Image 1 (cartoon, rainbow, N blue to C red):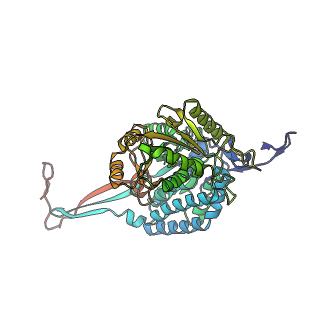
Image 2 (image 1 turned 90 degrees about the vertical axis):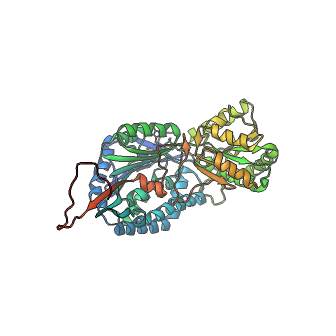
Image 3 (image 1 turned 120 degrees about the vertical axis):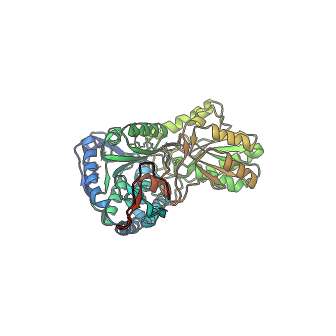
Length: 510
Ligand code: NAD
């Protein structure tokens, strides 16, 4: 319940439940978190926060479901995936509106997120092909060797607020297609989309218990990390939590992939088309209010590219239409919470205090009619140096820092000195510079005149260094590998009339 009036009268808000065993579940915990509407600043719902008993209930349902789901034929699994794909596509607008209401991003951007999630479902629809093993005939006389992959069991996904549909879809369609059962712990800041996704899985014919949702916070996450019934954990979120998840889940014997935060640099060469580069830079820095792990947060201008780029970016940044996500005219929405806004505004101030110059200042931004929303306007900070907080911190807001260097090698060195290695891009008309950059940077995903180089679903997504703990990227071939383990069978069927004698030395091939 929330106080609705200063006089103290209270108004009910809905409570978002868990999804366990194919239905909504109230669980045992009475702890709740607040779900805000970032465009209005209203407390729009409460979400249950699971305690270990709730996690245990989800794992029990998932363990039971694994017995039959792991034995379900590939064609039956593929059929359910195709049906799920159809349903998500049909409900894309509903999902996008739910995302806009809880995350704050604009509906058109949320639709793009759903589309990128759908592409992973489409990839997973090809599971019969993806799980084909190898076969070697007659490796030795009368001996054949073949391999195939089996699911792990119950696997869990712990996901961030910034892509409440797409990031979980990097995980569950692939895990489930491989024959695992899946427990999702979405972000407690925008939990509702996961409930609609759960309903769509059920409607598609997925058996009860194969996909569950437990909402929660650190207590719930720790229960997942320590649970002996969970075989693997996929995590996406900030770097300190990713590091923690990787360590704690590894200690409890789980397979772990933990994707962390980012500080993505876009290099602008003097030979780049300034109009093209600035337009893409603005979209990549301010789309989704900069709350993307692949957002460009540092523009690195080489040689004399700086002044022209800053002027063009500043002019375009000032024209970005900021407003509620539900308003079709908005290009950029609010940030997710008041705390996020205050943190971002504080970092912008630190840039000014530490000697950078604010080309566009988005502090004190207010949208008429939505004065209580969590707004930060597009911000461009010029003449940033690597020692400044705005460069060292992952701001995760609509803030573009411009760092000026002399040569492309200086730019590559700057990218490589940064602890993160998620994405990076170069704007240039020189193939030589682009090639030197793509080979020289220690980063997992690289764009050439493409500012946000998110790999298609049939490749795998992941960064290097502090942007990924564990060695497998998500979705694509590495996702299939993460959610399965290999068996290699060596077989011999000797003819009764011609038995093969055993020997005491190590077998050699004949
Ligand atoms: P976050 O790390 O705060 O939360 C992620 C998840 O961890 C949530 O489910 C949350 O409930 C849980 N969590 C939070 N604190 C915890 C704690 N102390 N112990 C255990 N669990 C905890 O991240 P966020 O703010 O939701 O998302 C933004 C971050 O995610 C950014 O750093 C962004 O770069 C990163 N991100 C990375 C990628 C990628 O692919 N590398 C993609 C999207 C987002």
